[in-house]
Structure formats: C-alpha cells, structure tokens
Image 1: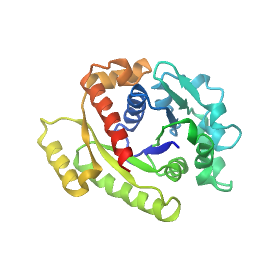
Image 2: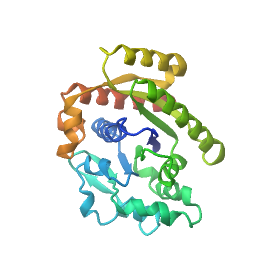
Image 3: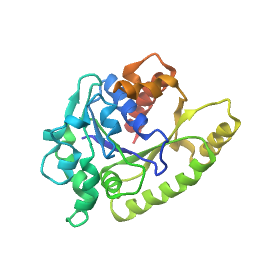
Image 4: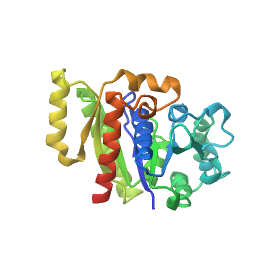
Length: 256
C-alpha cells in the first residue's frame, strides 16, 4: 500500500511546492511509483510537473466533490515520471462547496484508498494555510514532511504547525505524525542559519532529515520550464541534494 505524505507548512514561501515536485521526481528516478496531489488552487505543483493546469479535463476538485475518481482524474507526466492529480482555479470554490457536505475532511482519504495499491508514495502539496483543503491532506496522510528555512520566524511558525498536527492526530487521524523536518534554501555562510539549524537538531533530534537542500539558482529556474530541478538539471547542487533526500526518504520509510 502507498505511503501518503503531506508536504506542509503554514508559512508561505518556504519551498513546499519545490520540495513536493523534486521529491516526487527523485523517487520516480529510483524506481518508486509516485502520485503527486496538488491541493493548492494556484496549481504551481501541477505546472511544475509538466502538466498544463488550464487544459486539465478533470482535477482534484472533481475528486473532492466525488464527480470523478483519482484513476479518471490523474495524468501521467512523461517528462517527470510520476502521476499528477492536478489543481487549478476551480479548487478555490471547493472550500465553499465542501462546507455543507458530509465527511468533508475525509473526501481525499476515501479517494486515495481506492488507488493505494497502485503507488508506493503519494505526496500531497498543501496550501500555506489551515484550510479545508489542508485538512483533507492531513486526514489522508501517514505523516507530514515539513520544509523550512533556518530563520527565526520559521521556528515560530513551526510551533503552530506542530500544534495543528497534534490536534488532527487527536481528533481526526490517529496515524498522523511528523516524519521529518527538511532544511531548505540553506546557506552555511549565514551564521544565523547555522544557529537555527543547530537548535532544530537539538530540539527535534532524528526528526530532522540528514539531507540539507542548499540555496540554488537552477532549482529556482526550473519551474519556469515546467519541470522539477531534478529533471531540469540533474547535475545542479540542489537537484543532487533532492535526489539524496529521495533515497533518505525511502530508507526512513523502511524503518517505520
């Protein structure tokens, strides 16, 4: 059965989408069957996976409203090597439409249960807020991967996220746990980043992934070509770090 992970952080601009698409591509490169679910109405993870959100006949919106199954709505990205359950602007309306329906926070979980045997990993890119969409992701997942920059305000945001995960664990999803914290956009020359990194390791121990993703221009350029950095320029430092992270992720799951 597929292992399902949310990539989540309530703080915006911390590299959630970059982490999701590059981890998906990295896992696909080492032979894993991957489904990437885009839960953000902006659809950046969809576009960054070589799929045009404007021409999607079916999206995650249709799955949440139970008018399509994941098998019907997901498309395979030939360039990236993984399946994409894409998102577009329609998804913004799902927030309002889901308010009145039953089991609204479990819609995605039920849909994923039907395709659990088809994939090794399901990665869910969550929007940067605790919305009904994020809640659907957290209720579906076995764990949360938290990408974060090593900055002071990131530590404050992390406290909020940990509390949210505890609440969801207690009330909606007993399987949910933090799988690990991924340090992204890291620049070892900045003393503060090194200090925050040390604080993270002291406080969270082995919950902090060994892999560190450096600040890297090629990773930043890749989305404009509609590709993850791992596919766009495999030799770039950032791409190689994400490939190492994919291998570390597989090893960590085998120990769970």
